[in-house]
Amino acid sequence: KFNFCAGPAALPEPVLRQAQEELLDWGGRGCSVMEVSHRSPEFTEVAETAEQDLRDLLQVPDNYKVLFLQGGATAQFSAVPWNLFGAGSQVADYIYTGQWAKKAIAEAQRYGRVNIVASSEDRNFTYAPGPDSWRQTGDAAYFHYTPNETIGGVEFDYVPEVSCPLVADMSSNILSQPVPVEKFGVIYAGAQKNIGPSGIAVVIVRDDLLDRAREDIPRSLSWNVAADAGSMDNTPATFAWYLSGLVFKWLKAQGGVGAMEALSARKSSMLYDFIDNSDFYSSPVEPGSRSRMNVPFVLADDRLDGAFLQQSEEAGLLNLKGHRSVGGMRASLYNAVPVEAVQALVDFMADFERRMG
Ligand code: PLP
Image 1: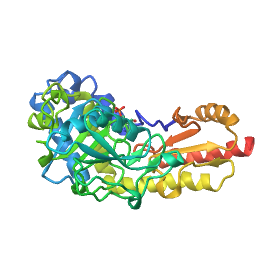
Image 2: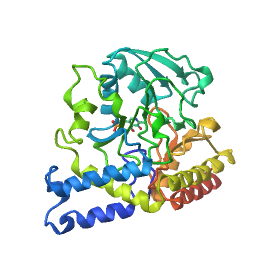
Image 3: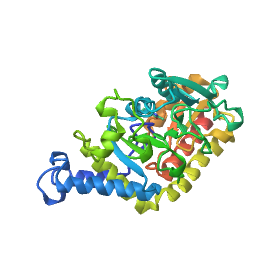
């Protein structure tokens, strides 16, 4: 069966097999990795290797800290204003492109002023606004955007050029292509799409930003505290961290993020080309902003949605239902989804159209 879930998403099968083999007896120690102290030399090695592999994959410069923190991307977009509103400007620039940007904006508004630089609400969040339309603040504490809106299926095909620290919620497209990390102040991502199981978030933060936190920041949200403690100020999500490390090794063996970029281009264009050549299916997203990771599509007759979902599930194509706020279908094509899955989906869609169209 093929899993198109938007998150928690499919994990690479070899990773799951290795985790299964090691579950009860990790490396001959007679216990599970979950039962080992996070401060033990064995787990320290897991943690350090995972960090180094992630640094290698994304070519993270030395002046950035890489943190593995408990909780997901919601904890991190809540942590952003706490960590960056302490040293001067109380205004932040945000691009409003959909549901995840909206939630991040609402959090920042609790602690400072948010300037909406650009919004795609006018066309129901179906595009990524280009820089010509921006209204930037001169002295913003930071500039936040969501490079890939998981729900709307909208992805930026460029990195914003800004004069203040650039903050990106890369939850749903991290590790799917090379990124110029040096252009960012902070990159954060919940793990459960392209990294590992839910329960952990990765934060990549430039070290000169670690002293900008509000004084009343909760300890558990402080990147500075986490960086000083090697992400172990309190008990980390050890199993999720270990599994993320296995995914990083798998990614390296596949050829790294360059290979994932080629693969995601191939998979997503297979599906978009098919949709664009059909009158039965359509994509609501403007062509230049279509996500390589999350592909929403609708049927010309939404009375067939139920039959489509039931029959696709019977055909072994799982979790194609669109987000409740958008409707229709959504196929998420993260790194662990193989080309064969997309081929099977396209074949099913063609067959469904023949029978029902
Ligand atoms: N940001 C984006 C882009 C997401 O896709 C998600 C979850 O799907 C989140 C934030 C929220 O992540 P979490 O559930 O880990 O808090």
